[in-house]
Length: 300
Image (cartoon, rainbow, N blue to C red):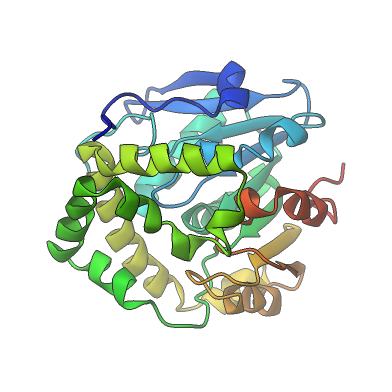
């Protein structure tokens, strides 16, 4: 069996943009991609649960033509520090806020996928003066329609989730197959992407630190989002930040109804759906995501 315990390597085209950023208040070091002109409008890209900044590999070079692009691995994930702490939404938001402080990011464009969309949405509510534009990619604070699958429910259960996760170490092909629900058509991705994802998902499976962060984040975020529904309509009705909700039409993880809810609750929010895309349109349909962002998120 191949060895998946070594350090995660960047997507080759992103390697020149890799750096590490110290967060003194949090006592953390985050792995981060930073690309583009430092004087250009800043764009902060926030990945989802069990992912890392390489998920933006199809967008970072293109966004960097006109923006200063910052894409971190969230605490506990990828190549960032993996302390033994409770990975609550508040913990992740504090790290992102300090990252913006350390890098002197103001009037930032936020783009978040899945959990990253939830965090970006919450940051916009808490610090609207720092956010110029918001894009929610298959994730937001608003609960969407649909029911979680049996597999999702089992993963959320203590002990059962860890057992299922650890079993994947015995079968690299099964670990790769676990990605299928997140895509409209995993097999349609370019061969280089498939090979990269095969290596990457197995590296995650073999990382004890990422396993802790995954389950801690998964369980705390689920309770947090449920609590946030009370009074959320009033909060979102007052949001003045221009917002795009961009959803893969075939998302099996978070129903497109989640995007519809944002568009209904937030007066200045617009929903754009992307055909032939699942939960990760930035990987399956990066051209379509760029076209969607051009509607307002990329505007001067």
